[in-house]
Each structure stands twice: as C-alpha cells, then as structure tokens.
Length: 267
View 1 (cartoon, rainbow, N blue to C red):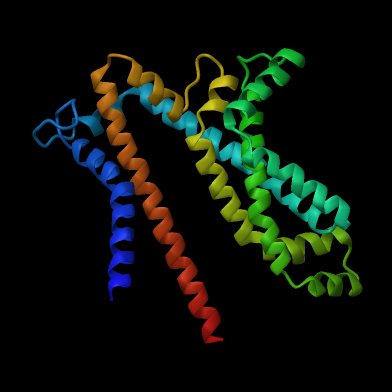
View 2: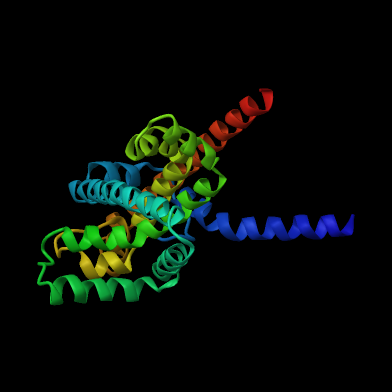
C-alpha cells in the first residue's frame, strides 16, 4: 500500500511539473493582462490578435507548410533507407544503422552550423532560397522516420513478400503491393514525428532560413526579445492552440489504435 502511494505521488508530481506551466499559460491567454502572475479580466483579445494579425498568420502558414513538406520528403527517404537496410547484408545493415544514429544523438546546433557551412559556404547555395532550410529539416527528420519504419519491417512476415515473388510479382510490384501496406503505421508515425520535430526546431532553422522567413520557434524567441506586448501575449494563445491540437491528435490516435486492437482481438 505504501509503495503504491509513493508511486502514485511521484507520478502525480511529474505530471504536475509537466502540465501546470502549460495550463497556467492557457489560463492567462484568456485574460487581458500582459504579465503572468498578475490578475486580469476575462478577454479573447489574444486570440483575436492571433487570428487577425497578418504577420502571425503568415508565420503560422509558413511553419506548417515547411513542416508538412519536409516531413513528406523525410518520410520517403527514411522509408527507403529502412527498407534498404533491412534487406541488406549484415555488414551493410550495421553501417546504415550506425550512420543513422549520428544525426539522432548529435546536437542540433552542430547539425545546423555544419549544414550552413556545407550548403551555403562550400556549395554556394544562397541562404535567401529555401533549399538549405528544407534540406536541414529533412536531415533532422529522416533518421527518426527510419527508426519508426524499421521495427515494422522486423515485425513483418517476410514469407509474404517471398510468396508474392514466387507467384510472379516483380520486385517493385511486391514492394508496393505487399511490403509498403504493412509499413503504413510506421510511416504515419514517422511522418507525424517529423512534423513535430520541424515545428519544434530552432537551431537548424536559425542557421539555414532566409532572413525574411520565420517559423514559430524562431518567431517566439525573437518576439520575447522585443517590446511588442500584444504580440507576446498573442503567442500565449498560439501555444494554447498548439497544445489543444496535439492533445486532440494524440487522443484520436489512441482511439483509433484501441478500436483496431479490439477488432483484432474479436477475430
């Protein structure tokens, strides 16, 4: 009984530490105060500012276009890499797994600065184009897609692929009609993780983005250094909206997964 109480208390403490700051920010996003910790009246002005300020709207649209576009490229590259590693010889598989781990454990500031030097200084790509920015995000995201798809390949019944080849299907046909459908959960998980990484990234974006372009992360950092109080408090509303959207996606994903597991158990 005492052990259960200690475990529950520790879990509650961790959850409070994680969620109380977010909930506090959400509460103050519905007030007219500009300083957290001071009292204020209920107001929707932060949300009005968020959705009516063109600068904020363009920043949000650009962030999500970058996140979805780079995540789509990373999903393709990560999936191809995982399939290639899975069907490679053991030495090649170990080498690919090792090379994939480096961007995962490497500090983002190192990756961002290295890409800046490689793409802009060595290859002479202009920083005013979006190529270095997209390439940087793909480099960040693709290894995580790889790690999401590879376990699905290991769980897959490889005899189905071999049976398809024995029945006359070509390598490409067997890949697209037999292998890829079984990898869809891993690809979707990797894609969503890649979107999250892109939305959250700051260092790689800072080193590779055009001067006139901002994502949510870079905009928030720059805004906190400025003196525009309305913009700062509107970012409270933006943080609340993002949190609610992510919560809705997680709940929907858990609901779908639960329904799928119930269906499999009923068979």
